[in-house]
Image 1: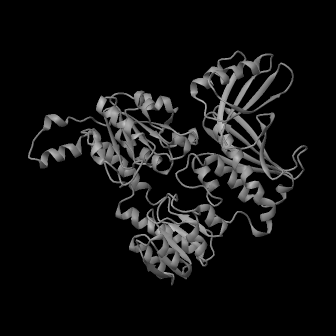
Image 2: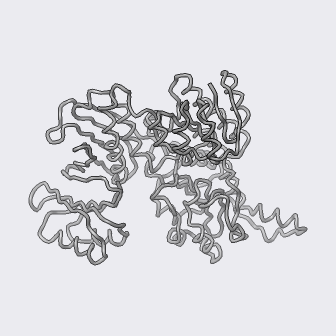
Image 3: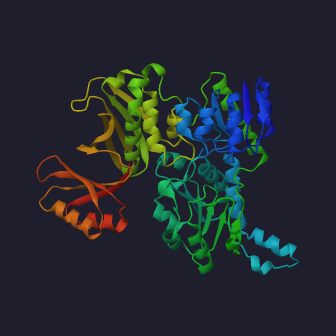
Length: 526
């Protein structure tokens, strides 16, 4: 076996390869063309964030079995292309947890006690005790946005400081949060209430600029904001404006929308602490990451199942034809129910109806969980870790099979989700090779995922209802691509589903919800 290490990793990882008789070549700083020219001679490739593992590289790597990302994020690897080529991608999501949590706490302490500013003053020959009056963490409310691995570790480590811990995470059970001393709250309450706000959530389409001008304006003017998670979660222009105008008291950043940080001189503010993406930069973390990713790669090369596979064969070869077409159905049902379920999730039951229930549905179950979890987990959810990831967040996973064909759709995949505020039931089917959502909380619907917004309106069926809804969308120049109404009986409970061509603002949703006999309005993207 031969492995190419294209980005620098700790020597412990190299030695672990060699102890398993793997030949290792360390060649860092290669251009894309240089990598393409040599990758065909290797069974494994190790990268960090510098090397882009493109489709062309993967196609050229005729002997590649595995690509290892020494870290968490895999944005620099073409996962789809790797999966199509049967190349397993693994990462190391757990080894930097303590380092990132400790760096977060270091930044919090630096802010409340003015440590960087006091140091700068001292080495400039000044003794300015009166200028650096600090505050204590004791008694403060620390708001954590996200309770994944790192957010949970921050909670555990700050508890002894006698802080009041609150968190927003729609994919964590109440029991899990309570066990680590955290009270779950909604996002708006956290923003308004917390003295210190620390971000620990992945960057996704719906979390881009999660903290923007509006959110900052709702914070206490004494609030401190910390981001050691992902660049792009904070609108940095809005943050700088707030600091200069007294909107909040201070902030500390370790990650940025663009890295390396451009125009860093514009970030010069006495209450802003900056570090150059150091969250995982400890010798222990780097040693652990190297060992963890190498262990995953050795598992693949030696025929074992890795613990942290980012992708994997979509289904056993003998059932690929029967199972693989239903993977996007499972993902879409999971994605939709994650957006429509109110409250904190407690359990998911995944039900397979029809012929697909006769097969091993491990990959389908994992695909459903992956769709449900994808907006919340800092690690990529795969068939290897899907159930474990959900259970670690306190969500109970069960599966049920019914080999009888469903009356209208033949094969049907349903997720029954329960939360602290109720339940939701969504079913999907494959019709002419296309994904269709066919049942939504007892109503028959026909939703074809488009990537655009869908509005679900629960209301009482009565004359004029559609006209009122159309008036709101028309006045606000919202183009409706499709509309369907599902009802149990005339003038009874009904569900109207609108497929839109453009995004809808919160005030427009509120205008629809204010219509007489409208009970609830929800929006989702699938």
